[in-house]
Image (cartoon, rainbow over all chains, first blue to last red; front, side, top):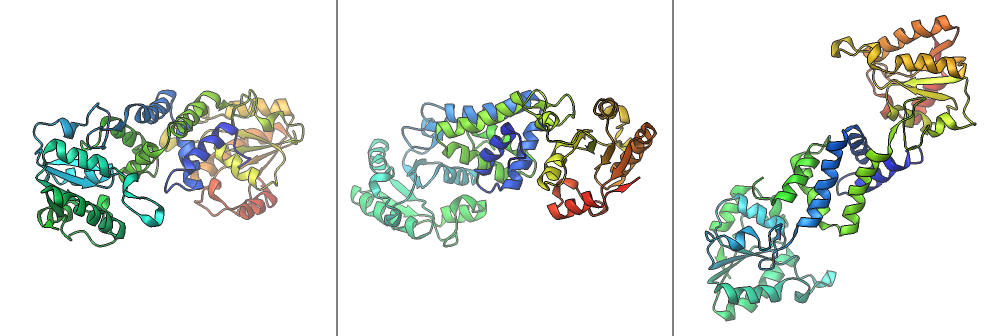
Amino acid sequence: MSYYIQPLKNLITEFAKMPGIGRKSAQRLAYYVLSLDDNQALALARAIEKLKEEVHLCPKCFNITDLEVCEICTSPKREQSTVCVVENPKDIIAIEKTREYRGLYHVLHGVISPMDGVGPEDIKVKELLVRLGEVNAEEVILAMNPNIEGEATAMYLSRLIKPLGIKVTRLARGIPMGGELEFADEYTLVSALKGRVEI
Amino acid sequence: MSYYIQPLKNLITEFAKMPGIGRKSAQRLAYYVLSLDDNQALALARAIEKLKEEVHLCPKCFNITDLEVCEICTSPKREQSTVCVVENPKDIIAIEKTREYRGLYHVLHGVISPMDGVGPEDIKVKELLVRLGEVNAEEVILAMNPNIEGEATAMYLSRLIKPLGIKVTRLARGIPMGGELEFADEYTLVSALKGRVEI
């Protein structure tokens, strides 16, 4: 690394921290930035800064947003009677792409995982219960990833929500076990949505 | 793309412009930035800005540097009698890594390529001749990439420099034809340096 001048070394180090970016790729990206004109490089730097400045969590559903309350929560077109609970904001993108779901969302920001020391109090469970009261939900779709932690979290939430007289469903087994929701293709997600079963 | 909020969309667009970064990778990287704390994200943005602010070309050898004159040109330890001519700053890194070469460099910033409309006046040829006079060079090593344009550029420079009474050499054929100097392993580069032949 000592062959690189300091500013280049610094950027290579920063790029190499990114997921899936090895040292060779980081070098290539740093040289790419060096080859940009000043305005192009500034556009990249600003996009990074703006993302952190402008993006925060929606106080209602905890999806990421650059608005005070997110677009989905404020939309009059969304059915207020259904709430789809997901692990992460990325999962909302995956479901929205299907154009099949018109209800609301709630992002847990994780799953219950005793192995990792994550309990219900570490994810947005309390907030979900508050929300369900506010929107008078008739159905909650539990759209956790179909793996051990996801299943356990769905079971836990189901036991909490059913006594409130709300119908609780989960996505159909269209998604292969051990798979990740955010990488599922749209057709698989559509059938998973359509074939959802009460639990 | 419309499923992403604007600041995320912007960063994905910027990342997707980078070489070897597809749309999926750009999304992954943008979410990575989102997951950083403010200081970490700022460090990345600043590293990009600083690279553009602080890095310029050395007025002597045209290597990239963050100093007024680059470290190699100002080092009293470097042999002033040998100048190694390379296409790009990255090639200097490759040669320095061998720890075999102790002379000076000159970066052409390209090669002569009539097909691409690049003539001798578009690269740092005139500057090389000025430099050779200043340092009283005894040997010039032409370290272009061993491809058609590199060879043609070496031939062109050889015809210009030899009449000045300076020994002109090129790297030995240790580097495979069609290969790229910056990706050669260090042993190949060492033998290429050692076996250099006069032309």
